Structures are given as structure tokens and as C-alpha cells.
Length: 90
Image (cartoon, rainbow, N blue to C red; front, side, top):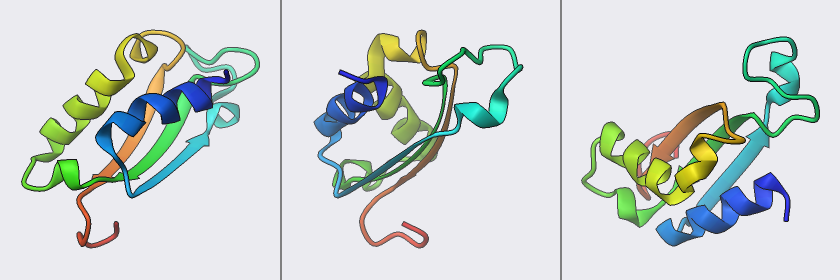
């Protein structure tokens, strides 16, 4: 299983209606935390009814909890856009 597959599978616990995941590791080559081969810097766009009524911080905590130890290794950086259905720019 790839890192991307593992991330998608774990985030499935949030029952997303939209999930876009982009490996941006190549943009960070030479940066601390960047590993050869990527899988360290990610951009996540996720829409889930589970986020309804939750603050941005609460949404991020839900994502971090779902990802578990992946947030320590191999993920070094995660850019998150987490929206509830119907929110602007979802």
C-alpha cells in the first residue's frame, strides 16, 4: 500500500464526500523533512458532514486523529482545506 493509499483509507473514517490529495514533496526538495522519493509534504482538500458545526482547529484535530502515527512519519507537512458540505470554496 502506498502512503497516499494509507492516507485515503484512514481519512475514510470521516466519510468524506470529496477527498483530494496531492503529493507536493518535489516542491520541497532540499528542505528539512523532505525525503528522497517524496511522500512527506501533502496538500489535502476534504469535505465531510462530520465537520459541520466544528471549528477549523477541531476539523484539523479530527484529521490528525484519523491519520495517527502517519503524522510523525512519513508525513512532514500537511496543508489542509477541510469544509463541511455547502461551505464556500468547498
